Image 1: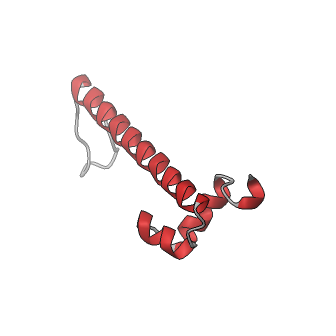
Image 2: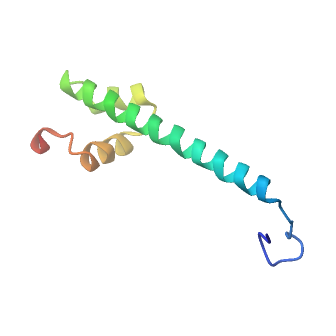
Image 3: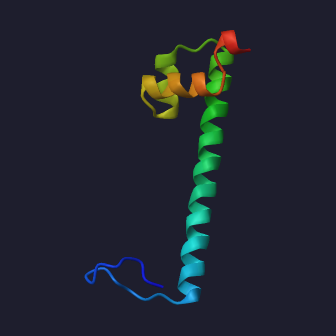
Length: 81
C-alpha cells in the first residue's frame, strides 16, 4: 500500500503492519473517548455541588472556555436539566 505518492514519503507496508496500525489507532481513540467521558462525569459531579467554573477547570485541567463548552455541548447547565 502506498501512503503517499510523493517519492520522498513512499513506504510499502504489509497487511499485518496495516492491521496493527489500525488496531493501535482504535485503541488510542477508545482511551481518548473514555477520558472524555470521565472528564464529563467529573464536571457533572462538581456542578452538582455548585463548584465554580474556575475550580472545575483546575480540577479537570482544562481552560474555563473548554469547561463551558463541555457544559453546553452536554447540556449540563442548570437550564438544560
